[in-house]
Amino acid sequence: MAGAIARSLESFPAEVDQRVTLSRKPSVAVRQKQGLERLRGDIDDTTLPIIQYANDIANADSVVIAPFETITPSQAVMRYWRAFKPQWAAAIALDMSPLIALIFLTIALRTKSERALQEIEMLSIPIGTFVQVKALEELFRTIKLDPKHAKALLDRSLGQHGPDGDGS
Image 1 (cartoon, rainbow, N blue to C red):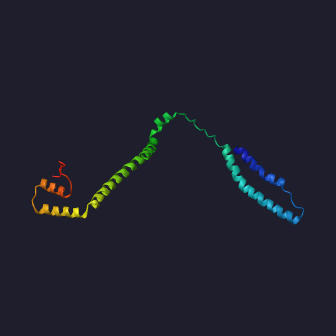
Image 2 (tube, helix red, strand yellow):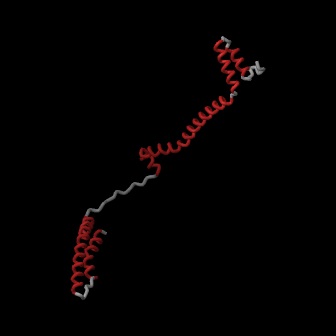
Image 3 (cartoon, helix red, strand yellow):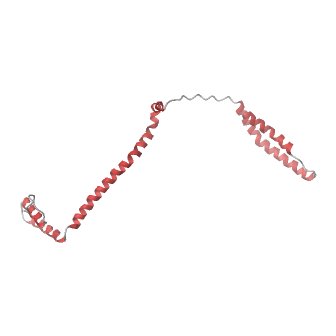
C-alpha cells in the first residue's frame, strides 16, 4: 500500500504538466509559467517527505502480531479477578447506597418524631396543670414525703389513676 501511495505522488507533477494549457498571449503565458513553477515547487516540498515516509514504511520489516488466545468468560474472571476488585466494590456500594440512605432517613425521621411528640406533650399541658405540678415539686422539696405517696399525690393532681385503676 505504501508503495502505491509513493508511485501516485511521484506521478503527480507530470500530470499537472499534461493538463496545463498556456495562453496565446505572451504576457499571460509568462505569468502562467511562473505560477506553474511555484506549483511544482510546492508539490515537491509536500510530496517528497510523504514519498520518503511511504518508502520507509514499505522497506520496513513486517510486523508480526502474536495470535490471541481465546478464553471463556469464566476463565477470564478466574485469570483477571484482581482487575475487577474496584468495579465490584463500586457496584456493591451503589447497590447498597439506597438501603443506607433509607436507614439514615429512618433514623432522622424517628429522632424528629420523638422530639416533635415531646414538644406536643409539653405544649398540650394546660397552664393550670403546669402551675400545679410546679407547686407540687416545690412542696416535695420542702417537706419530706414518702416517694410512693408523693407519686400518688402527683398522679391524683394530674387526674391520672393509680396502678390499681381506682383513682387512689
